[in-house]
Image 1 (tube, rainbow, N blue to C red):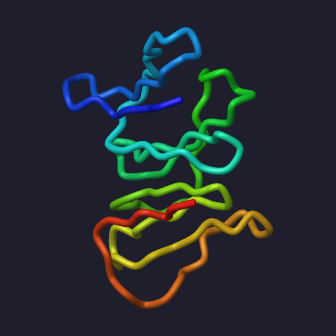
Image 2: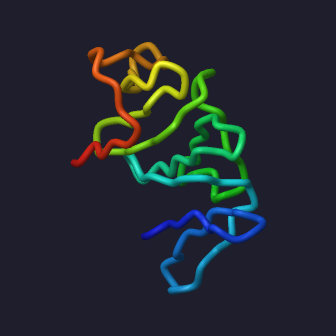
Length: 114
């Protein structure tokens, strides 16, 4: 199921439904990524990371963490971000429910892979 972040106003996210239609998710979005268990992540226009879990049926986004981000990438085992201030890589830790810094390299974009 693909998802996109629109570049035209109102800059909402869209997800393709099983019927083939695009469903608009009314939240200002700069970037989207899929993660574990089909969770959908979005970088909001406010710079924070949000997550939607499939059981929510696209009715509620939850903020994940308290840091602003430059980029987000998801994989089957986690979600990764580039911190907006330090430009460093962080991975979400399911055990602590917090982001943990991964190395000291700086980046602007990332791709987590599978």
